[in-house]
Image (cartoon, rainbow, N blue to C red):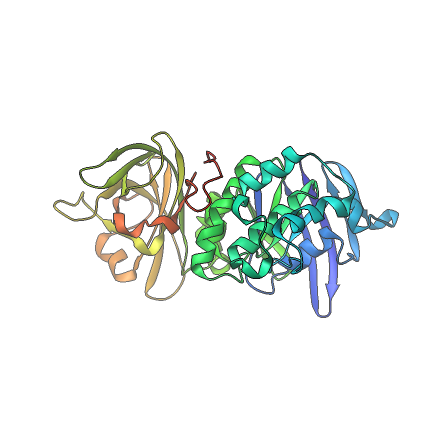
Length: 377
């Protein structure tokens, strides 16, 4: 399934001019507030008409201004999840879920309902009203309702923005599960680098109504030249790893990536499970020689491949650690003292306690409802 977007729209003094393709998985429209993210998905959904452009889903045109073609919303077969759940307060969870099917005239099968209820962990909530749900539960119901409308594309407009940190951590595994087990492509709007790093397959980076960069999330977020747009404070690298074993004596889980062995506090996941580790640049120290007798357990030899050229006392450094990219943030004084420059061999040092569950993306077991299976990432 492919979404092809090529649109232009003037909104007051703001000019939107965007062209991109989104494929299977989760495509993040990422950028600062005011970059044009919500305007883009509102045009895709049919809530706003473009001044000029073309939109196609899996080769089927839904907008073509040159032909004066614009399918009405109900014929586009696009599910939309807003920042707030927007559930019907007088209906139960079950009735809210079934409303999407009823509205599109698609009755489907009970197996469809059971599959989505199981995937989103809604089994124990079906008879409740929205007033009795948490923010995270409401968003899960809203996602289920959108999926049961039989969409060929799912749009999510900052679905975590209105949630506190605890509720965000509750719903993130379900969005991961949806990304990995559903054949419906997802376009996910966010201005949070941590959400994008954890969830996205592909990232479309927007700035001032234009596409500044597009590609695999790990490649875009590690580009030093894009830090002014992706956010320096949370900048970091993404490591793909697999669980090798659990060490019950130390209470640690050992993972393996191209860089080598990673030691993290115990993860409740089976050996062989694949996981995505987000390593923030500010959590990485550098050592010219392999450090001895230090508390940090994650030490990886690497080669400097890039150094940021921005002014000020802080410098960002990009390392190649046997094929894994690691980013580090140090002072300019440390840069000079260690003689860091492209081609220099150095060691990246990361404390295990810096890599908590919020830094990880993987097939988390469901520990809330007891009716959702673990889905491999």
